[in-house]
Length: 456
Ligand code: NAD
Image 1 (cartoon, rainbow, N blue to C red):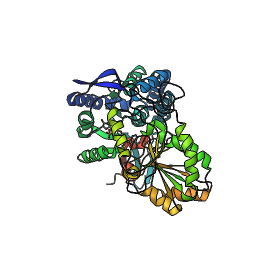
Image 2 (image 1 turned 90 degrees about the horizontal axis):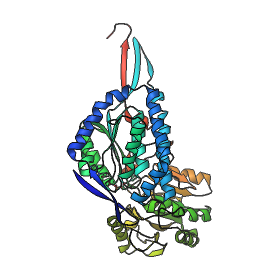
Image 3 (image 1 turned 30 degrees about the vertical axis):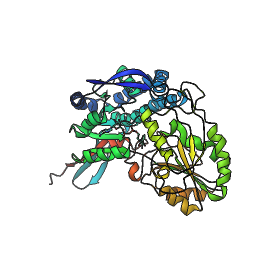
Image 4 (image 1 turned 180 degrees about the vertical axis):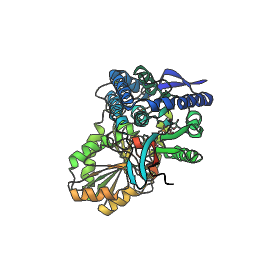
């Protein structure tokens, strides 16, 4: 076994050493999960629901501890971290209602009775990125467990602490050890075993589009089920008829939340040309007002980036020709700090407008009319999310229908509500998480015909 050092990104200090799971240990865990699958699927729906609710209650009782762990491990502001832990609790409660509602159909056929069953898949492998360790884990494991599957979950190397705590809480709640296992380790070792081991029947992957393509290619070898939640290059479109004050005041939240390390970050702001100057005047104080600093402070709105390496990759985006319009503040000293930054690229092929930066940099560009706004918004390989600011309901609907993205908000930057579906168009992903239909994605439909006539 090798170990990795977990670093607090706000201080650059090592806070814990975590053992990394080897390929052999991952295989053994997958095999235990496979052995546990028949008894877990046989648990009566009401009892499975009760266990998930007890898990939710255990998360709730531990909410402050989980949130503080995430502050230390991920540098998320404490208010955000509490929301993230609360999201796991809520998602568990939401999917706890599913076991008793997983019903098949009776379809009329001549000569007999035809029924369908929604059957669990078996073992589900959940691979989680470092940017939202708790919610993204929950979006995978809660519906998978509810549908009667067992779960092996791999957190990102940089951020394993809350997932490990969630595994302890599951155990305290009475979920059997082999039904939900957390395996910290490398993607190229543990994640790879999820893709290659035949006992894993589905992989739920959230992460970069580049790795997502490898996962999809690997899963294709066994026609393994896969859900992919990948990158985004989302547009925040501001029309001249919008409430400009509100659009500008909320734009920093739309992109700088989680220091821009958010697949839904609106890292392009498209502004109708006639209000561009006014919008920039309003945006500047809003950006300068973002409170960046100690994530443990209640008033902090933005923390550090996850690592020195990631900060260097974000900073490299400023090496090009695009002018920096203005920046907010960031602390000096240890920790991987980067200020909220607004750039105004002149060229539509600038990487600032085409690549997922995953940091607190936003590019602002003008557009002339509705058609150009839609064309610019769609001029990307991604299609995850976006915002449309307008006071014209017809326009809001036309543009919503025109933008190729899975999650849009009008006069808002909300992207995630656990009871509504979430996922991407184009290279932002495959399949949907959350919402009422997510449980079905963890089942196979079996059709059974019973002859009543002795016919063939
Ligand atoms: P990443 O792709 O580098 O890693 C994601 C996870 O995959 C990690 O746990 C990693 O260990 C694992 N992994 C890496 N290589 C692997 C391999 N060959 N086989 C199996 N597993 C492997 O992504 P990241 O840097 O951790 O996260 C940032 C990315 O995640 C961004 O692109 C972001 O947009 C995306 N993301 C998407 C969503 C969404 O819901 N669409 C949500 C959050 C983050």
